[in-house]
Amino acid sequence: MNEPPIPPNDNSNPYAAPSSEVTYVDDSGTFPPASVGKRFLNYLLDFGAMFVLSMGVGLLWALAFPEQLAESEAESSTSSTSLVSTGKVNDTMVGWAVLVIYYLIFEATTGRSLGKLITGTKVVTADQQHRASFLQILGRSIARLIPFEQFSILTSDHRMWHDSLSKTIVVDVRARKIPPRPKYVPGQKPLIIRHPPSMPKIPVPAPTPQSPGQSPGPDSDVT
Image (cartoon, rainbow, N blue to C red; front, side):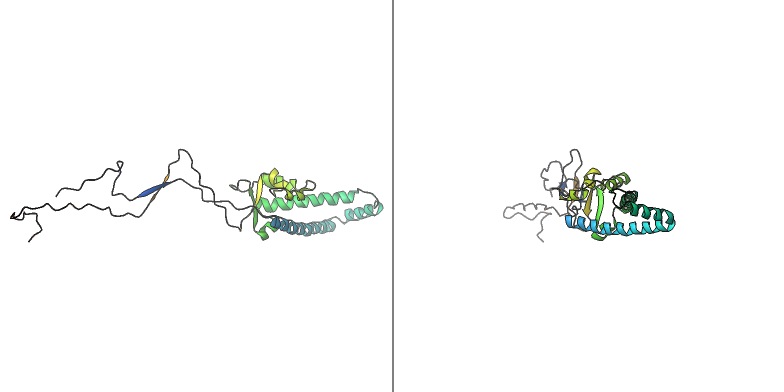
């Protein structure tokens, strides 16, 4: 019996499983930026934590150096009418130091302050590809000392100055990731996805017609 002819198919194997070509896609996705409400809640929680921390530092300072505390109180009573006194300047400097150290320790080690830990937000790089570096967190913490920096949340993109200056962003890690858009990379080999194999249809040759009175041949199916 002659073998059935194989139709041409661009020099491909007709018995191979069908396949399709797709480009590589980064399915990591990105988290959406934290909402204004969560950012404001972060500020309130962190402010309360820094207030408690400042009170603790002040208490320890008073216990360790009672003489300086007495001198500061005496100076404050004698210069109560002055707009700027040494005690007020010292309190301001301590407050700034507590703010920078608070954010530097928490965000540099975990990417989250106490408020961000509660609200499920986190500091990452602006492209969300890496964890914020120590220098970026230091820049964020120092940028918080800019006057009226808290009102920068009212900008169109709701990114605060300490975010844009340090090239970081606060994202909501509890929200669903935003899927990336598929993009084609020139010169990149496509990914081949194999489908389940299927049996090819083999054409059955038609029987050879026989003339009347001809005896069946040896290949005949007649018994």
